[in-house]
Amino acid sequence: MLIKHTPDAYEKLQLLGGMATDDILYPQDGRSGHRSRAPYSSHEKNPVPGVYRAAMPNGKYINLMRVMFTDFCMMDCAYCPNSNYVPRKRYAFKVEELARTFMELHQRHTVAGLFLSSGIAGSGSKTMERLIQVVEIIRHRYGFKGYVHLKVMPGAEYQYVEAAHRLGTRLSVNIETPTAEMMRKLTSRKDLDRDILAPMGWIDKLTQGAQGGAVGQATQFVVGAADESDAAILRRIDQLYTDWNLKRVYYSAFRPVRYTPLEEHPPTPLLREHRLYQVDWLKRVYRFSMEELNLAFDERGFLPLEQDPKTLIALANLDGFPVDVNRASREQLLRVPGVGPTAAQRILQTRRRHSVDTWRDLQAMGVVRKRAWPFLAFPGQRPPQGRQLKLELFQAGLSREQPQRKPASPRTTPETCGHSSPCAACPMYGMPGHPGPAL
Image 1: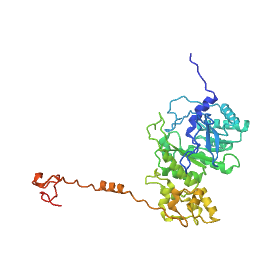
Image 2: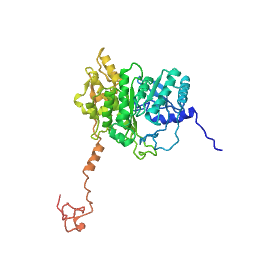
Image 3: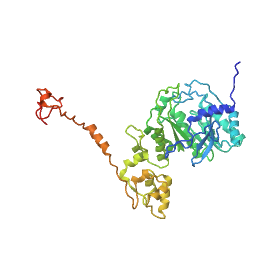
C-alpha cells in the first residue's frame, strides 16, 4: 500500500534551508581570504537544519534561521538550482507555519534572527506579499524585535518594497550580473533596470527619508556566469556604493548546476571571488579611488589571481614609496601592503608619544612585515636585500637558449670520414684536414 507523506515544518526547514545556500551570509574576508564562518555541520554544537552562524558588521556573530519560503520559481535563470529548468519536487511553507517555526527556534535560543528568501511563485509582488505576512506575524503577534534580513523579489511593486522596509532590519535585491546585456544572457524574464535597479532606488530613498525601518541594503553577484570581466563588476559596484549607498556587495563564484543551460560552463575559481572581495574592501573600507583600483587589472579587465590587488597597485606607484612611518598620513599608510585600518590607527596613536623605529613595534600594532617591508621606512631600518638567481637555474636557462655543439668523436679522422665534399652532418666538419672549412 502506497502511503503519501506530507512533510512537517521541520522537514521543510531542512529542505528549504538547504536550498537557501546561494544567498551568502558568511562572506570571505577581504584581508584573510577565508570565509568568516562555515555553516553548522552535524558534529557541531547546534546541528539544526537551516541555522547558520553569520558575521555581523561589528565583528560578532549571530545565529540566523536562513530559509526559503518556497523553492518553486517561475524564472529561467540559467545558473540557478531553483530555476524552472531543474526537474525536481518543490516545497513551500504556509505563512503561519513558517512564522511559528521561527518563533519556536527563537524561544529555544537556537536563533536570534531571520534571513528570509524565496523563489518567485506567481509574480514578484505576490511572493513579496507572503514574505511580508510572515514578518508581520513575528513582529506584531509574537513581538519579535530582533534582526530580520528580508529579500526583495525582482519585479516587486513599490507598495511591497515599502512594507518590507518598514518591517525588515536589512533588505537585499540580488543583482547577479553588472549589465543589462549580460542579464539577457542569463534570463529572458528579468529586466535589470525595471526589476532590480528600480527597487534598489526605492529602498535607498526610503532609508534616507524614514526615521525607522531597514537600516540599509545589500546585493550579490554570481561571478563568471555571464562571462563578465572583473572591471565591469567594479564599475557597477562603484555605482551601487556611490548612488544607492549599499552597505555590502557579496560575490558568489559560479558553479554549474545539472539540467540548467550552463551545466557545461566551467566553474569560476574561488580565488577570483576572493580577489573581488579584496577590491571591494579597498573600495569600501580603505577608500581607494577608481583610478587607483584600475591599476590592479590586466589588459583584459581581470584581476590577476597570482597577486593581491593592493600589492599590484603599490608596485604601479613605486614613486610614492617607501613611506616614512613617523610622518605619513593615514591615507598614505593605508596604501602600504600589510597595513590595515587598525594598524594605521595604532601607528598614528603611538607617534603622539614616541617615534616608531623597530619592526617589533610595528608587528605588535598589526603590520604584516613580510608584505610591508619594501614599502615602509623608519630610523635605523635596513632595506631588504635583493635575491639573486641560483647558479644552476642560470645555467639551465643558458642551455635552453644556446644549445652546445656536440663534440666530435676522438676516433673519427678525416681519413675515416670518407666524405669528399663538405658535410655539415659529419662530426669532423670544421676540423683541420676535413674537406669542410676550418673553424
